[in-house]
Image 1 (cartoon, rainbow, N blue to C red):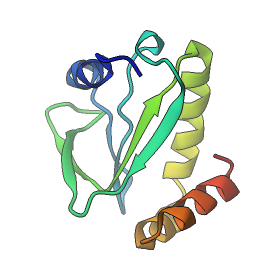
Image 2: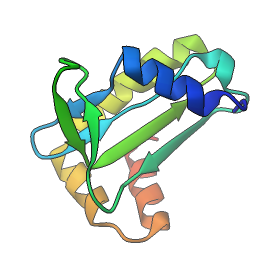
Image 3: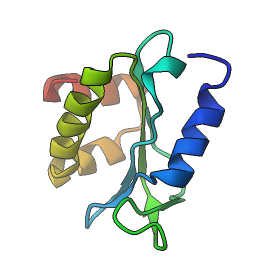
Image 4: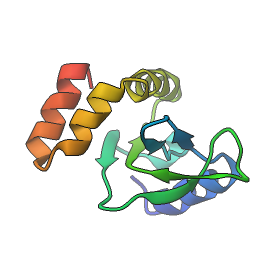
Length: 117
């Protein structure tokens, strides 16, 4: 990522918030334009306590987020495909519950790999 990646994520989040109330969990998918990413990555953060994000569907509302998927994608066509895949994952409450219970990084990675990430 470039040195401005973090700043660009925050700027984009102000304009296009990414908080989603899934029903059981809150999820955020912060990302920025491909020009700010040198090497592609996806990071999953599971905070100890929920973090407030503005809702994607109503930026006047907030959602307590349990999962933060930070996308660092540098191919514009990949962003849409990845967001579609994440939206499918987000709808899988059983998988999210399993991810949320994990305390070991390796197990989180295996669960996501089994799901196709």
